[in-house]
Image 1 (cartoon, rainbow, N blue to C red):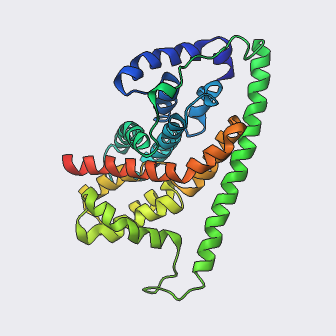
Image 2: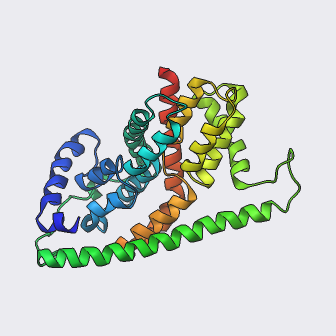
Image 3: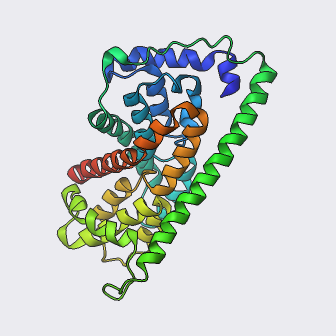
Length: 302
């Protein structure tokens, strides 16, 4: 990314996105490029493409970028998930790519509703790139050092957030068991998701099972949720429900990803760290609702 910035390739791409997206979706080119990149890149890799613009994004645009990161998955894990699901759903990779593509504009719509912005304050996508890097070697050196700093912060935040979830689950495990199983955050949230998955199109007698998958995905991660989906008994979910859940689970909206996002964006724009943290939980909500909307559309079509 640093090399592409030095040769002014990425700024040209941003300007091209700006011309199209201002007229179609009412968003700027920088945030549009970041949102589009989330379809195949991760929630930290995508903002890296527009890093010099991050400090100039409005609060609404910053939230759009965060929400799209939560509503989609990276291309690298798409292949992994398709291998896991290939014995359950035909052409799983095609469905996962479609889910990520559909969820991005859904996340943009929800983000604008949750954190509206004024068009007058919208980022104008202009930045002085000529002095950002002094030479190709400077771009390589600074890009590498920035990447290492980014990695350390992401790993640290991920470990802390996953550890906190595990700690809360251990404390809940001290309470009396419910239906023969200990309480956990994912079980509790799974019950809360049951009405939402019913609205999404899951039959009433399958809502507890589908809701528990959403709970696992939100509290832990979508990888474990897909593993549980594959391991379900044959009669737990119908083929239609399995397809709907594939789309609904296809997003990074969970607490571990929140740690990754806070660590990554906080390192790239430390002056906006407090603002990023304040939008963190909202981004999980927006990303989850976006994937549920995608699942609902699949429920209508199949």
